[in-house]
Image (cartoon, rainbow, N blue to C red; front, side):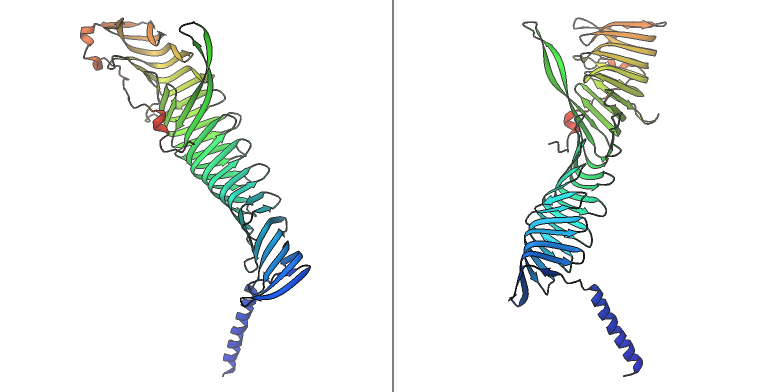
Amino acid sequence: MPKIFLTIFYSFILLNLTGLAQTRSEMITVIGDSLVGKVVNGEAIREIYGKVVLKQGDVRITCNKAIQFISRNDAELIGNVVATQDSLTITTSHGFYYGNLRKAFSYSGVELDDKKVILTANNGEYFFDEDRAYFTQNVTMYDTATTLTSGELTYFKKENRAVAVRNVKIIDNENEIVADSLEHFRSSRVTNASRNVKITNFSNNIMIFGHHLLDYAKEKYTIVDRNPLLIQIDTSYVTVTDSITNEESTEIRLDTLIIKSLIMEAFRDTLNIFKAIDSVEIVRGDFSSRNNITTYFRDDEKIVTNRINFDSPQPILWYDNSQLSGDSITVYLRNNKIMLVQIDKNSFILSQHEIYKDRFDQISGERTEIYFNDGEITGTEVEGNVLSIYYLFEGDERNGLTKSAAQNALIIFEDKQVAVVKLYGTPTSEYYPENQVEGKELSFTLPAYFFIENRPTKEQLVIGYKLD
């Protein structure tokens, strides 16, 4: 055989042997108070008793008893098992250590403590070379800021990152987040949750549902960008007069606010703001709305709705049998009741008669303010180029309509009906008798007239959400 070929051949063998030596794991060593060697099914094993210590590199494990499988480089660990590596400590009553994989496993209840988090579960395994834990069944991970529970959890120690699935819940001082799956970054306190997401804020009793959520706990900012739904249940107190005794009493009522949109943001700083963006629908008692953007100032008890740009549709608000629209609508609340509604620019109000559904009182102007008392409308002020149409009645009998124009107007209501209309600034008015109105109601409309029947309802907004 030529000398050069032999040189290449032996070099090849040497390289392969070196590679095998590099890839082969370090053998584990096990010592204790006593040792028994035996052969079981052709496999050599050693049983070590009393103050057992297993070592492999920087991994050290103590227990009461160990069964070492020599050829496999594995060991079964029994009684008071404690595994350590640097700042990491894992404890269990019964576990296994796989030397070639440098992995510990237990199905007898396990706890991991790395001085940053404590992680417990029914089952768990830890990969020492990867600094990665995988725990299943009744998983709990907690630190000084949060507590996380789930069915399965993977913890990446170096990254301070946890990925959890199945019945996931994470709680801190402000919020509780529930989801099908969740990724949590401990250092930045950023949480990424997906599918059947629900976040509950403890301070304001607000719940936001959706299919994807990003929560930045340090910045107190949350965004839900897939099918968000906000629900807030507030308690209000209402004075009720007994129809027989005429005595007054106080009733507790639950007022539910529901907001649905394509994107929702929560700013939980000193302003405490919730913003709904695109295809927004709102329902609260007799009040509902459809608009492009809604900003809910929780602490100020104020809801502002806007159009995105001039070409976008105006926000629409419904209250009882009235439809309101304008470039911007602001609703002011007090003790969870509507106190004032402001409509800015191109305001238009339409009220449908409860009995004669084809008759609509209408008023338009540049700016409108509507006043409420105990939830009922008491008056309306309209400013700038006011146009109005009001139907007249004598009792329940129809009596034509009045069409008016003025610079400003004041309307006073009694029992939800128009009682007084006052016009200011060179007013003009025309009366149309009933015989000119009946059957021709839609010919008496203002230039701003439009009527939408499919106002949002609570039942429609919550379809497709798991609210329990």
